[in-house]
Image (cartoon, rainbow, N blue to C red; front, side, top):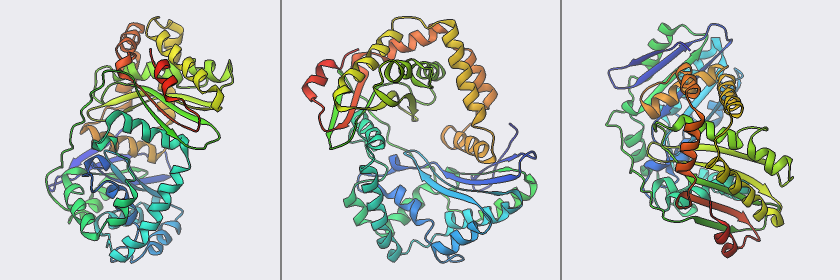
Length: 422
C-alpha cells in the first residue's frame, strides 16, 4: 500500500494513494469528532449535522442539486457519524475525481444550514430513531454501551434523544462546526487512478478557507465495575436479542492483536467455537458472532445473537461456557493458525477498492494520528501465541467485567442475575 501524506499550512492533513490498477477514485473528508464530543444538551447534534450537510450550499442550493450532480456520474456517496469521528465520501469513475472532490468539499465547507431545512429534517431524524427502535438486533448494542459507560458521552446514543432533536437551532450547528470541523482535526483523502500532484493542488485550492482552531478534546471515560451488570429492555419481539460481553482494551493497547485473535476463535466466522456450539450443534440461533469494539480510552469484546424466547437462557449458558473454556484451556496450534489466517485474509479482502484503501488510511490518521500499514498489522497478528490468547482471556473473562444487554418480552432479570457468572 503506497501513499503520500502532507500537512498543509492550515494544519489540514492530506493523504493520497495512487492506484493505477483500478478504474475508480474515492474522495473522503473525515473530521475527528463524533457524538462523544457533544455535551448532554447537544447529544444527537453530530449526526443531525451530517444530514444537514446535504441540504444545500450557495453553489448547490438544495439536496436535489447535490444528488443530481453525483448521480449523473454514477457516484456512490454517503456520510456516517460515529462516536469519535464523522466522514463524507464519494466514489466515482476515476476521471470524475474532480467532480467528487468539488462536491464533497463544498458540502463540508459551505453548507447553508438554514433553519427552515433544520426544522424539516427534524421529522426525518425522528423517523430514523423510530426505525432503529424497531430493529432490536441493532438497538441492543446501544443498550450494551449504555450499560458499560452510563451517563457519559460514550454511553449516549449517536442519534440522541428526541427532545434534543426537536430543540436544535442553527446556532447549535454553527457552534459545533467551529469547534470540531477545523483544519487540524480534519483529514482529506483521495485514492484511485489519480495524478497525486493535480489532486494535491486541487485540495489546497478547495480547502484554502477551512475553519481553523485547536483540535477539541474529549472527556475520558470512567470505568467502574465490581460485579456483573445487566440491562433488560422489555419489548414485544419475535426473538430475544442478547449482547453479552466484557470490558477489554483501548485501540492502542499492546494486547489488541491477541484480543483480535481471541475474538475470531470465539465467534469470528462459520467455523468458530460459538457458531458451531450455538448454531450448528444446538440450532439456537441463525446468527451468532463475537467482535471487538475500541475507542481511544476504552473497549470491549462482545457476542451477539437472537434466539427463541424459551431458548434464551440456554444460549446464554452456552456462550458463558465458551468464555470459561477459552480462559482455562490453551487453544491448539491448528486453531490459532486458522484464526490468524482468517483475520489476515479478511483484512486483505477488505482493501481491494479505492474506497477501502482511502477509508483505512484516513481513519488511521484521524483516530491514531499515525498509519499502521497492513503488513505491520499482519506481522503483529502472526506474533500472537497461544499463551497470549490464554493470558488475555484470563484477564478479561472475569465476573467484574461481565455485562449483558437483552431486548425481549420474557427475560427474567432475577434469574439472569444468578446465571451471569464466568
